[in-house]
Image 1 (cartoon, rainbow, N blue to C red):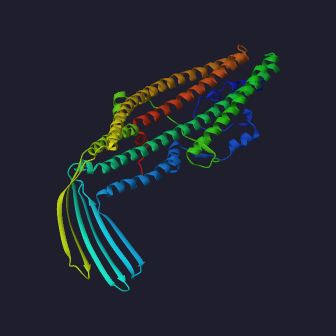
Image 2: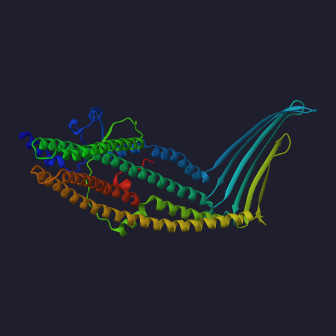
Image 3: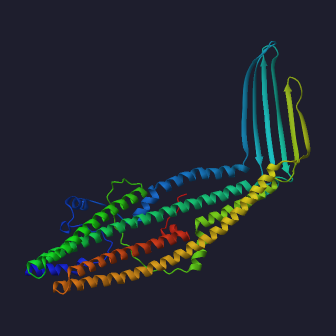
Length: 486
């Protein structure tokens, strides 16, 4: 009788009915866990906090590493575009050995050249050519000359708005590339947070299943004691034994989900898949009220996807401007000077000139085609911009509403869990007094397990909703105090 009383006290002990603490627990041998699983649970594990997981993702995640590698080429493209107005130098050299019926000679030429484009579209070029020929019979001969040319467009290609358009396009592309990098990092952080909390969820589900199995085993022992004392029919124990089998099945499923969640996080962190990770975070849910209007204004200023659409619209306007400039006649002012001399022979002689050059395209539909394409691209981009704004509004509104709904669900789930726990305690006390049945206790046990799972899902769902809202607002990097190393 003393043993029976001890089993009843153990059955109704509140500590065994504790709700989700999100603290990792080790399965016990008394819970019906196999010896191999028990040894695996007792093996040393690598503890990992959420901040550490995010730090590892920022350092080793393959998507981020690829994005940073791509930034090397992108930044060099900006450097090339910025070099547009820098002096361009070229050096050309040639050496030939020739032979004909009259003579055999060797010829060498050297031609250095320099060119410069100004922000107003002015093109300057200067080149100097030097050559000498050595013939067996005719002897040596030298020649050299210089040319200076200045071309100032007056219609097509004139002005800083046109001449500087390619550089402005490159600068806008650089801004878009930085925003794309920011978006990649934010997406990776959010993905890592989700995978980490999935591991937390799987660990806690394993704890819930283990505790449920332990309570089922204890109920079987209580049933056996009640049967031995003549207070319960022998066939009633079948219900408790069936519940044990059901809980063992649930426990195996929880182990499988835990293994899958751990592998997913290890892959995201680019770690060895055999690493025995253990999520140790104890998440705290705090209610944060967000005003939709302020959130939308913040998203318009920070959200990378929306800002990239704004940049794309600016680039489309520049494309139309360049295409319209191509429709104009090519009228340019020319000025230059040149000199040439040969030795033996003529003296150095300079020649200067100035004039106008006009080119009128006739029947060239390719220029009109480029304008039509640019105008269509601008109109299309404006439609995308309107769609992007509406999508941003929907994302922010949905994100704010989702966090509020998840918080209310978390509050309700907490109350439901407390009531389910108390309900089971009362029913177990009634069973100890012979005023209840196995069926009723098992039913309330299932309710408690469901309430624990619901409360856990509500907690993880609320925290994930906050992370998704951060992503929609473009504040993920600020929330985690991450600075792009770019």
